[in-house]
Amino acid sequence: MTAAYNGRRTYPPIRQALQVIVEIRGLAKVYEGKVRVVAVDGIDLSVREGELYGLLGPNGAGKTTTISICTTRALPTAGHVLIAGVDVVKSPAFARRSIGVVPQYNTLDRSCTVFENIFFHCLYFGFTGTAAKQRTQELLGQFHLSERALSHPSQLSGGLAQRVQIARAIAHRPKVLFLDEPSAGLDPQSRIAMWDAVRALRHEGITVVLTTHYMAEADELCDRVAIIDHGKILVEESPALLKNSQGAETLYELDLRQTELVSSLAASLKQRNGIGSVETTPTGLRVFAKNADGLLPEIVTAAGPYGLRDIRITEPSLETVFIRLTGRDLRE
Image (tube, rainbow, N blue to C red):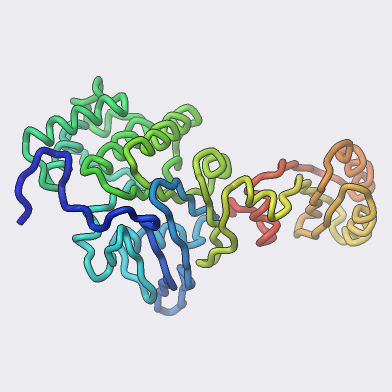
């Protein structure tokens, strides 16, 4: 039994001066059945203390399954995960002392007020009543929720509810906070407010691991990102270096009526200065341009005789890196 305490330290430190706080090695998750599904396929990654690390990929890529294993909500088929030096499979209860979790969906207790959702979480993790109240008041102020302390979750907007979930998740002062698709369903203003709240966690020494399929979110928040698809990590680096090292280019996606003739158009476009490569798609072409200056009119003119119906332009981004690596849109 752990004695009651003042809310500043729940448990003795597991290890001093950690450089790597989340370590994943050979992680795999396979669902057996009529159709065998490999959700996670041999992932290796390390997250350093104080980092804001992103798992980036489309729906079904394996991001949420990876987070579920890291947070003890699912068991791996193979491999291991260490959180602050603790194996999450061998010692799940001990590992949870260092973990905060904000799942993809709202899990606030609807029968409790905002204050009670945070307060009872503190009590669950061993705070005294006085320390729990003090910590709850502190978090309500930090997340600008004091005026909504007596509100119930049903009375909150999506953005406010997400802030309450983050406040509750860090109430016991975890070392690592896992956020699963934190911007899902939020309007742009609420998303920006959530980003500010996440950035502020650095001042508390909390390492953040988030999953997302929003390019702007990963680019804006993360020190490093891993692009994951079909349960495998394709590449890992800082957003800036990732875009540079993978040769992120401006992407032109052409929808054409005469798709049976795209090969001749592709061959013509490949000869033009500034175009790196051209790929065929079911609806037309993808054109990757290294130098986009003045190129759009040339592409439109060249594609006009082939029944150009639509053209979409994506500036160099993590999305174009993903398309370059996988040949498909990250939002698929």
